[in-house]
Length: 75
Image: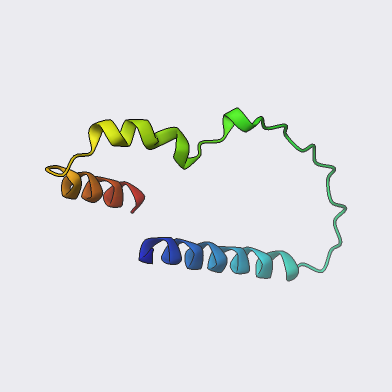
């Protein structure tokens, strides 16, 4: 939870920095038309996709090691 909040804070800070840089120009630029990509529901990974794998690979004996690995991957 702490890592997620840190990530959100960093992302918000970066967006503010980018917004300040863009707002400081005096020239007006026409926004380019953007095409929205089409994403199918099957393209998105959701927690349910990983339940079976987690149930078979995470045990009482190795859950601390698995948790440490996940946390280090997030950082």
